[in-house]
Length: 162
Image (cartoon, rainbow, N blue to C red):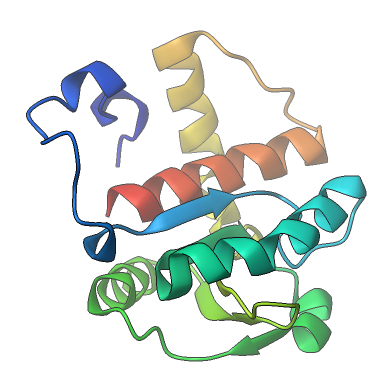
């Protein structure tokens, strides 16, 4: 599956009315530190989440990486109430990914989609090749953090594109 060559650009998203009904839109926020405390961004996300949930309600969903130890104490796994989100997760899971949905146990209890990068490591070579072929961006083969970022980025692209 090729992601980079088929991604729409902002300029191709014309034809929409100036204002779309807010109840039909989902606000996704993507961050490595969703339910994954690494540094200061975790605190920033936690601090603003309640206000964002108050403004957008059930239409606010954070996307982050799945780490079992963090999920055990920070996330309540549930079935997605939105049929489109459920379909996307089911589709990705049926194709070899592991995608989880739940509520992050912080103020506001936002929905989270968590992408298991370890379960998708089988795609790393293909995605790194695509990154090189499409963008001339090379990623060192033995750099774990860079490899994790590639996996997370492509899984996020897949999720949003599905």
